Length: 346
Image 1 (cartoon, rainbow, N blue to C red):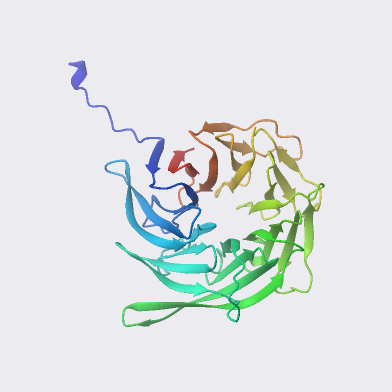
Image 2: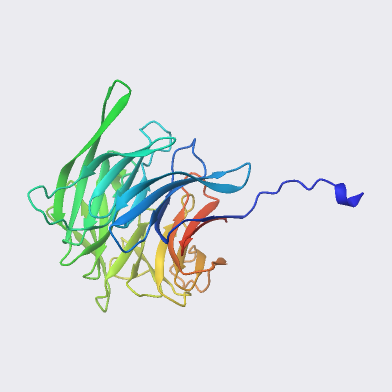
């Protein structure tokens, strides 16, 4: 008899998708009606690259590629419109040679607009990253190797027939650093629209306010002037942000009220860190991922006392080059390594 007892279908803790190419950029969809949907970007060292929309079929527990579209050069970042209520058009944006905004349909994705603020030149300065403002989804900010950041205004225009036209314009462009800018992120402080920070090859974290662009604040400078590659704001407490240096094994937590002095260093990784993701629902949890195959979740509640060890560790089958924590489903973290996407229940 025992063999025939029905085992309740327990949900898996890990789901895996194998793409046809090495993956680099990846992000979760935000819309409430598209639960386990992500976009992934290929990393192929040639002009022709791809972006793929994948979603988890919760009946079969398998990922399904919904549609795939061509992208010139690898995407440096992918983000879905931060539309947690599902009221805007279903848009996804990519950075690479330019910033592009795409409209996602059921079977195909089409380019809505290409944002280029250097119309009078054949030369294009590649974009290293961008951020989409959560408070005002009509604002995006890009960072470039030409030392600038550009803030774009997006118009999801009038409905003509059944089509919303999407277009964009430059709101402002500023020289943000002395060298290449590698990342940009809007802060939730002060209303969440006007403050943003950037990091770059000069080794500094700088903070800007769109209302007072004549000056910026240096929040941190790397003591050895190593380039800083990424920054991420705490989602619940806008005083804290995290950054990491090129080829660095540690993640530095900063408090904007105490400039230039890290409040914590997370240094359990045994190889260079590639990604940082704060918990969407908790001010004291952060996940880091590195070339040592590990994704580590840390509890930083006891700052400024030293944080010795992570509270959770996951070992992947390859060097993790991307990590994203789902804002609408905070139990799930996504990672990329080699040609694999995995989502992990935490």
